Image (cartoon, rainbow over all chains, first blue to last red; front, side):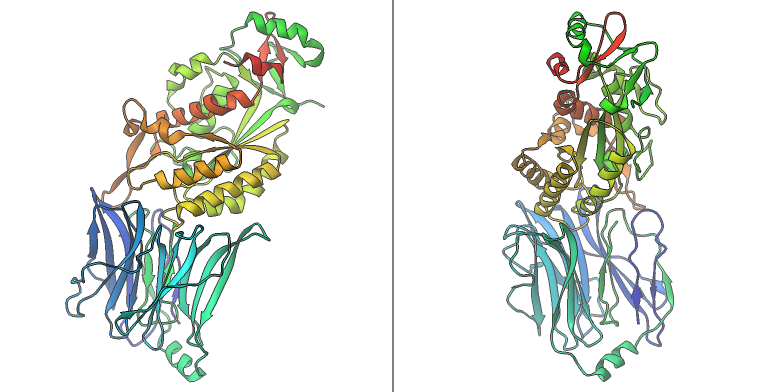
Length: 253
Length: 297
């Protein structure tokens, strides 16, 4: 099974993606960076044994952050990010147009209209090919975790993940567990313990073990060192398309 | 039992009123000779700097990432120490510019305060991490340094956006730091964030200020001090290489910027919170912990 280690942004990045499979290894990294007055969302794919050229998915004069990427069952990528504009931080996405033209992306579209400060997007595609996008927003006071599913090209209604409370719920991370359920983990402040604690929620029924074992068996180990191409403060995310059990892991400094 | 720490008072100017108060309060005061130049630690103010790399003093000339409770490294620690102890000719252990001695606030500060500055800055951290560690580091400061007054200077949040924390979560975390500091007997003082040219910190500062004031806690507006600087904040925050792609940002203050921060902490809050030590005409040190507030600059 793939293991992805978080890496930090000061200096060299010694952390590795571990894989071992007859399939071509695929890894995607997305991040935000600034070039002069321009902000960019950048995607860099790793295929086989090589890092391919970086691709600028989106550029803007607004401040960009919280980049995330996921892969639909047909292999096409969706990239998500937060963008500051008019006193809000809104959540946007762009979809890859075709597998043959890696650098072509759709015009950016909003995921959610009611954002105040939408941040920390995290995505996973389940065994049925439905994309689950989680993020945080403070439009109702404190940060809450929200969910919107993308099923067969249609965005479903926005759902609130955490219950009503008067504390921040932050930093969602989305995965499939070994039973094929979507699991979102986040950090929530506990008034009882007076500190941040871990929280999670499971979606879906357990699948039979054969399905889980089949997917787990896709992957094993080999090391891929990360070259030093990531800018400072870029908050990158790693995505491993063929491993649906750990699609994205947030990294931060 | 009293503990003493040797310091110099090269810039102290005796004042007639100090001598008068010395006479009035002589029976209540601890007296030492200037020859010994010692102040009792039992009557000392312990000032803790608590924040991220900007509390540490990180910049092109000083690359410490974490202060680890230092009392003698980094410009924020040294400048503030010099202002409180009025040590005009103190030689810095780490290189900091000497502009302190030409600054208006230093020149106007004619008094000594019995204080030690302890730096618990931790580079690259968000307020979430600050909340996690504030209790242990304030407790440790209390255990390590005897004193009769404990002050926490909190400046946190410039890394929060990169850590995917919204401005409201930053405000929530700062409020909780205030509460935890008070629970441990510290007087918290909170500053907002200095400007940076790659992110808009204004929403974060709005939350920090409103949360701080809602807790009836002292607030220091460093952001305004920087953006209203006569030469612009760019004079106080140099560009630094931020990536191998030659991206440059303005984030960490230069030495002059750290001087402005120390002066602002001192001028807006510390000089009113920490009693002065009056120096009698015969060079005796008279600690006047209450009345000294009336003598403030």
